[in-house]
Image 1 (cartoon, rainbow, N blue to C red):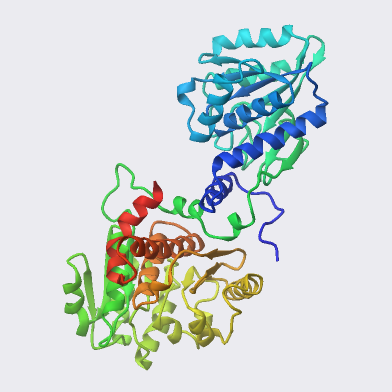
Image 2: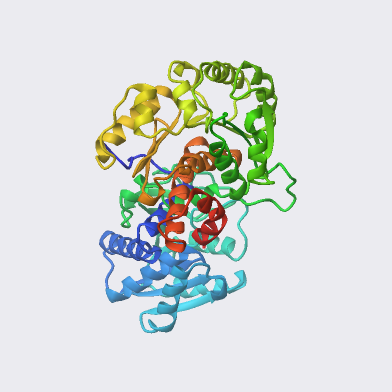
Length: 522
């Protein structure tokens, strides 16, 4: 089994892997160090750089420039002097990792590194003249822009790109241009140049090539891919990088209802807590509106849980076909639908669920099937195949649902393969709960390791299902929603254990959702 593909990756995945590596305990400064060292080793060997050679390094104020600062430092270790041109103000250096390495080269390496700060494009003419006059310059390095390029390029970066391209041929001697990770100005996802771009003789990119970059193009004549120490676990295990993009922020002009509407369908005469927990998880997570559709026998009970719960009733003690029309109308209102918590396993409820799912096919909205719904659907799996659905069984429920018995949670290779095969067969998203949660959509598998044994109490699965629905309602795809929900559910449990103690309750978890996420994001 391969955890990492040899295929190219989108630019956004770079940030995910960086953050996941940090979550694993690998500081981003370590990754930047590895990037700068691997780049330096490559250019020294390829271009036979010696102590009588000089290298011009054009750096922006982001992490791409930070890589350039590290390159200057490692060149100094080999006795090779560099001329570092910071294009922009040093006050604009954006990340702690880039700032750390800027401070080193600007304050300490005053013999090996000559620095020119160019805040304005007019100052670049002096830079060009300096490089052209000195025959010792052998190489120009492009560390201006990274993977985040979009649209027209602003000054002074725009003029710096022109300067690099102009320096390729100077004094009848060709200077090779090498780009760090991405040729500045090229969209790494499409390979297109929205405005202008560096024409690199060599591109040294990190971890995996980006999907839009092709060897032999005008902007990347040759491409080398170097490792920077991102382990397979950063791709295999759900981490901070996977979760952060799913935690959407409200727009300034947002209106009520635009930040997620969830319908929870569940409950029966004997079970009112499960749909309440799922509903409150959605509410405390922060979606705008949640409506909870329950049998009328427990409607008033749910209302007493919280004034935030909007209850809609169906006739009787449990769901029957009489509830179908009301459920369909509520589903039309919702952005995501959760079905199953506390629903019970009555034969009439099974008939309702089957007909409800048939009608939901026309709406094509994300659906989370949890708890009793998993038992009720086992004889009608054709209704969920190839659908925008998350199933949330534990290993026992999965065996009831499909007859499949999974290997132990820590037999990663074997369980990984089985879960992927089943998700592919059903063409849905599976979230298999356990000490390690396994999530797959049939093409990808992620494993979540957050959580603690103290979460083996009633209701934590209902919170997980609610988080899945809430994340789907924010327009995240089902796979990303399931990954983030599993991670957050476990993280909130860990947070409760740390802040309350080992005897926390599911209600404690719900009340801590917002605070735990705020701490996680910082």
